[in-house]
Image (cartoon, rainbow, N blue to C red; front, side, top):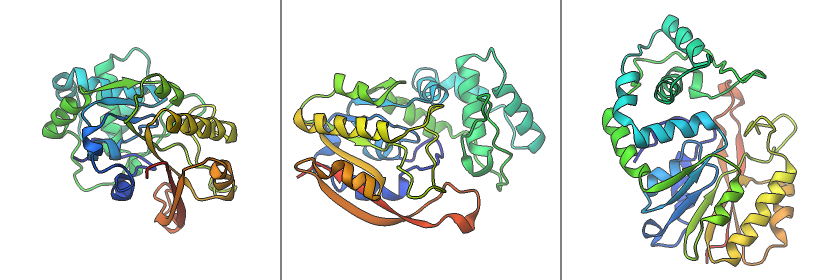
Amino acid sequence: MRPPLKWAGGKRSLVERIVGLLPSDYAERRYHEPFFGGGAVFFHIAPVGGSINDVNPRLINFYRMVRDRPEELIEEASRYRYDDEEYYARRSRFNSPGLSDVEDAALFLYLNKTAYNGLYRVNSRGEFNVPFGRYENPKIVSKRSLMRTSELLRKVDIRCGDFTYVLDVVRRGDVCYLDPPYHPASETANFTDYSAEGFGMEDQERLRDLCVRLDEVGVVFVLSNSDTEAIRDLYSGCEGLSFHSFITRRMISSKVSSRNSGHDLLITNSV
């Protein structure tokens, strides 16, 4: 199943690698994803239960409206046209106070499908500021896809908070995929706008401690990050983990020429 949103740093191209590290019966287990974003792995697995989480409240509102009020969301978003003048009017509306949850979610969907590169970016005032994208007749609303997404999201708990919540909800035998903001491979590759406060090394250390705890309680996890010396050092003292490195193409930069290949690292306690 395809995710309903485009998302910078999404893992659609890596899904097979990731699920290949999970137990063969992963689809029958409860699944948790504390850094949800576009949810490529989640939608590929279509789990029977579990939880998803992200710190972006407008992203989480979108998923909750898809789950709880899909018909209203579809009706509202279907009114929007792909046009540069309308785009900037809708963007201004999205940055205005007083939106209902449904309108906020519909505008979120519209901007995701029509903004440049499908980026979600805000300025220091919290205003969405991505310019109009140039596409050939993009499909903004897919009723079939959104209704299927709604049905799937009803099976999981949807949260908006710190990733450590997962320790309160996991059970032995569950599976967990963790896709935090990547540790920068260089000073010029610091794409860590996970929240207003960023995601620094202290957060990476908290995440490492969480992975240790997940292993202790019998949860199978896969974690993705950049393959840097700092990340390898961080997890090198943890017993029972395996490291899987490979080259992938970065798709965050707005300049095609700067979307260089980088080394990604998957870390797992899966046997």
